Image 1 (cartoon, rainbow, N blue to C red):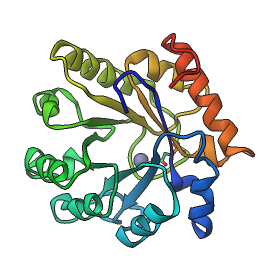
Image 2: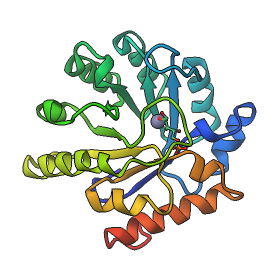
Image 3: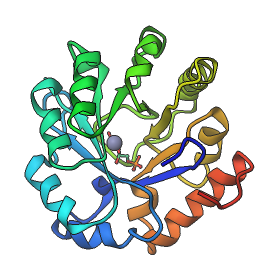
Length: 229
Ligand code: DX5
Ligand code: ZN
């Protein structure tokens, strides 16, 4: 992945959990990453899936796995996901006691390291940490559940982080997650996001692969990159 391409990452949270392998393969030829939401019923009220499922998914699809950990004590669990072959492992700054140490551990284990900021968390205090990370995930909803409405005011964080990354010549993916759909993805791309998680907009569609293509077109149009990427 280069910094110039746009990444579309369908979120399995909106898929049929009894057929995860099939649902992954349904988007395999069009998606860039597959977004996997791990929730522990403590950091967020919801409970989803854990390491055994990610290990199985790794064998079921060629798509790079983008693991979004919405869990407490990420230092205890995140390295296992890197060792299981996740492409990118993102944990929440609100849950981490030493984000830089954990980012270094993840990178040493061969994964990209991602830092997530939830709806009520400002990004400014963490800008100085970004050289240690490959991905910044800006929640555009309150983390925990799919199907919520996109919060456009979160894009101020995307703009701030993109400006900071550009000024420091950082290679940083800025990922938005929550309420991303054909009508909201353009604003996110224009604000400087270059990775887009979409659950309902992909798996709620009759043709998930076509939905991914439509999202990519809309994001590309917003930044003048056409459908490439
Ligand atoms: C929610 C998850 C999201 C979720 C987004 O906390 O992090 O990845 O799947 O779902 P939609 O795209 O439906 O808002
Ligand atoms: Zn997510």
